[in-house]
Length: 487
Ligand code: BG6
Image (cartoon, rainbow, N blue to C red; front, side, top):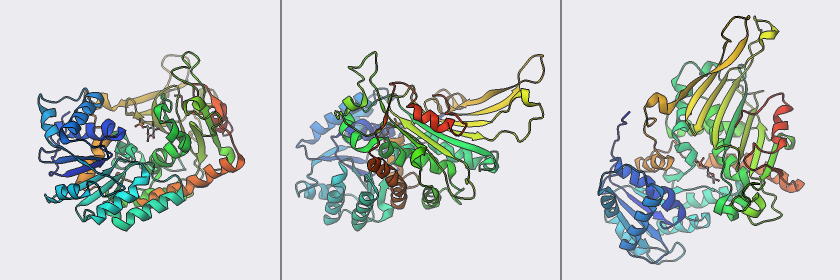
């Protein structure tokens, strides 16, 4: 299936932290792939900006190496990388001082076009960068800034950050990235819900027993121990990625697919979330891999903090206090070093009110599962008669649609979340970015949960490496006579 690529007008993208990990791993390879696809035009400029003193040739080498390392299989014609490298520029800039700003200003003001500034730097530099951009006259209508998570570490810091950015930029110029919103299947959630008549009438507490959202990873904290131990699964994953998934599942249909209509509805969901009771949460820390503890040590060793109380796994139950969802629990679960990499949302429908086949036929529930990764697709569990003689025995079979199978060998061309999101920045479409009030509302719900753990001095329970999380998580479900979907 060949998708139509509409080129975007030539733009300038300045990457602060242009030599850093995120730029090399995600941003530059994403731009290269859009270049190969013909969406980014040759006249566009990518300007690396960092404190490291280097010239353009040296930076082009950095970019070329990053692409070979992180996008090795990109199908591109011969010579395309060379052409792409012609778009690459570099300015040595000090975010905290004046060095390099005159040169950068001259460069970007020499042409009239969209200017995007990607803050691929520590959050402590967001404020100073925004201030300098404005001080040098670069915060005008053509400018937009892109900021990455973590967006604050609690409500107070997020508010402060929003306040700082708002001093120099309008909300319409601020693009807060949650890369989950750029994933193909996450957008498909909206298509499935609002593009089909089939599901929406059933999408409420009258028909839905409960909803599960799982984001399980097999990786551990890797080299990010220092950051992760200050964050934990709640801040790293739940406050943003899982919260966004929950919003898309639970929100009312927006009147239009436009940025504020969608974000208004998401915000209403977050604001309607009920506080989480302490006994409705399970936390865990992964143990070492018994077969290879050197490569995969336990969580505390991995973060080099023998007394760490930070969770690498969290499961919780919450409710949304509105007419649509009152009484339907939402179970959220995420963890590192789990059995499988699997992100899945399951809508578990209620049992039929009465079984005409008698109790021996069993009672069954339809489950609609939306797999975000891997093997993106949708499965609907349907109850049918078990084939053969012997009476009316019922079994559940999956109606399975893996998008890759349904849409052709390449699943309709896989576009990385960053490719889509960066192009949206250039096009000026904020639908898939978090608005400031959304982020604050998410922290307002998250903060009391984290404070509760701290006040009670709670320590996460150990769980087996490559398992399914601590027993407490299973008990959370068992108490409600339910069970987690298998991962
Ligand atoms: C990031 C988290 O935002 O998302 C990481 O900081 C996590 O800890 C990652 O591993 C997961 O993203 P993906 O796209 O691999 O599911």
